[in-house]
Length: 366
Image (cartoon, rainbow, N blue to C red; front, side, top):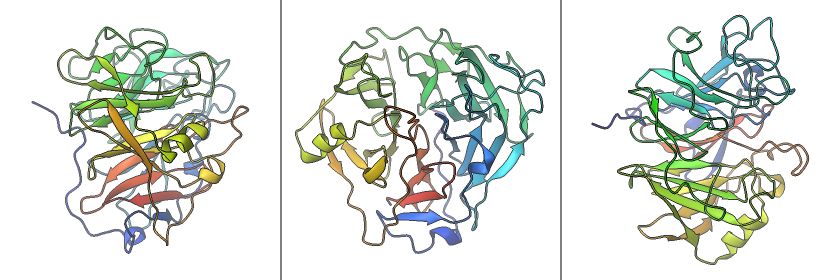
């Protein structure tokens, strides 16, 4: 029996900020700037509680960017959404540990690791990459209970099975798949699968971002080179699909030639965002750097292995989000998971947090 892990909201009265929003136009959500004081620009993302349309930023920061491990949230169904601090940052912090001495998880680069897990009624941090300190990572899986609000104790959940295995995407059953070796965390049994065979190779392996295709019950990953701006994996565009049913196998995806595909490659996307647009059966991919701010690439899937890439045409009244901050090749931490599909009942679209200092933006797609 499949858990409704991506349940949508029932029809509701549109919040004030969303009234009048046109299809394919970015809308700025006033009063949402500041990211609640979190250091989300430090290679960090956000989690979405799909059945309530709440956004969460948990323990974002890490390395020497920030030791601040606060928990904050924002309710997109509110007429005037604002960030709310749910748990304050620890008053005493230590370097290179998965948990501070007060029992709260240490600040870390959250990347794509923040996921709502209905089975546990928790927002989970699946792995602890680059915690506050000297760029040390841990395998701890941590749960945040919004009903508390409270953090679960250390060792409540099984660690990820190996160093560098961090949660990257959630499937339709609410299980979490990792970026390394496509290992699956079965949330009901609290067990991890072994790495898939084959796990991909130097031409097909994808680090991030990944998204879940609910129509085909499969995962899709897309990045240029290693997705981080390094050249250890070459300089090619990499795309992989993988069924969630049966024995998972990564299958390479290629794309038909197009001007949009050339532009996507030229953009050199790093730490990009991507999610599946269930209302339109497509993926939207977002980098948002420099003059590409606001531009969304459409990846159109099919049953085969050759897909299409195009650019979403924005409406005449569309706002333009600010550029993703930093400079590529120097200090660019990207969007990570701050570009997410949101189902608001009668309205669907994507929420974007370009940078901590900016307001949220929403792109209505249905």
